Amino acid sequence: MAAHKLLLLPGDGIGPEVMAEVQRLIDWLNAQGIAHFETEHGLVGGAAYDAHKASISEDTMAKAKAADAVIFGAVGGPKWDSVPYEARPEAGLLRLRKELGMFANLRPAVCYPALADASSLKREVVEGLDIMIVRELTGGVYFGEPKTITDLGNGQKRAIDTQVYDTYEIERIARVAFDLARKRRNKLTSMEKRNVMKSGVLWNEVVTQVHAREYRDVQLEHQLADSGGMNLVKSPKQFDVIVTDNLFGDMLSDEAAMATGSLGMLPSASLGAPDAHGRRRALYEPVHGSAPDIAGKGIANPIATIASFAMCLRYSFDLGDAAGRIERAIADVLDQGLRTADIKQEGCRTVGTREMGEAILAALDRQA
Ligand code: NAD
Image 1 (cartoon, rainbow, N blue to C red):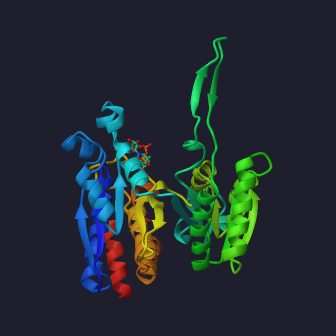
Image 2 (cartoon, rainbow, N blue to C red):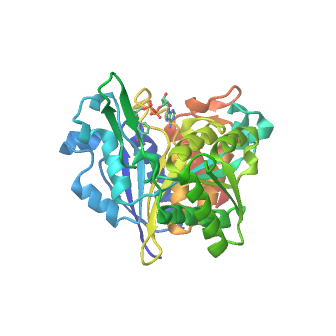
Image 3 (cartoon, rainbow, N blue to C red):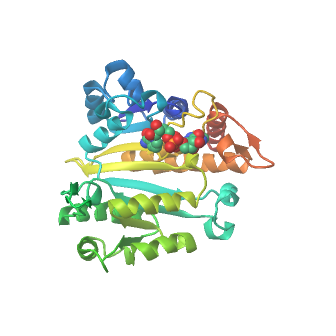
């Protein structure tokens, strides 16, 4: 069996606590002979700053580039609030995303039946929800030039951000989204604002062309991003995969995520372009941060990081069966009434990080 090289970057705060549960899953998969993972570890964020005065070292960057996939915990915390701007903890994550060319951000919004009542939406609206938002991550208004604030000299200032997209950027993110739709329920919704933005006109045109040329078997629909946002809270189950730009994706993915409950449950993946062997650079991470308020207490929810690792199995290593087993194990422990403090519920048992990880492993053992 070919070895898969993983780089684990736990980071700061609760990062190491939740990553420890992923390490135990990796050991379990190796012991079961389901996969053969070789893992390396590195420092990132504040932990790297303490050791090297940089948010990620050159050595760790080289390991990230050599790895088949990177699993990232979280970075930051008050301890590093006053470090130089270029060495701030988040800079390590931004450098990884940039140098690994991560242009596609995948954010699933899955509502586990046992948690449907924790959503701010009605149970019938969210129960069974399983959608995927694909956000363009390296272009658009967050990066476009000019990006300035100019003093107009008359007591006024002018701020400019520029929304820019080239054809190739839209084509490659559209392909990621169409490919995902093919592996799911075969439907893609593209969202932009073509009614008021030129970039929206081009976005719509290019996605339509990619569909006509390469993905006629996938159902494609277009929605304006504002009404798409309404539909996400009105009837989210109408969606399968949504593809959208950097700015709209930032908001729509948070909106969809909250329909499903706590930050501690939300995984994500960031993918780069495929190389000559079809292998994409990839980084998997929970959506949450380092949660300094609960760090070191052993109460963090490890499910977001474990579910991110399941995404890694599916998208980097084609181990969809193993990913599905982990996702079923998560659903099982929730059905059994186990909850970490962030999702605690009357009538359920509150457990810590380690106990939640152990329960998921036990559920996997029961399936084996
Ligand atoms: P946060 O996500 O760390 O925490 C927000 C709230 O959610 C906190 O009350 C926290 O206890 C809770 N929470 C988060 N994850 C949880 C989990 N797995 N289990 C249980 N509860 C959980 O966001 P914040 O408080 O705004 O930021 C804290 C630090 O994290 C800051 O330094 C921030 O810059 C950093 N941050 C890092 C990332 C990242 O590494 N990708 C993302 C967001 C924030």
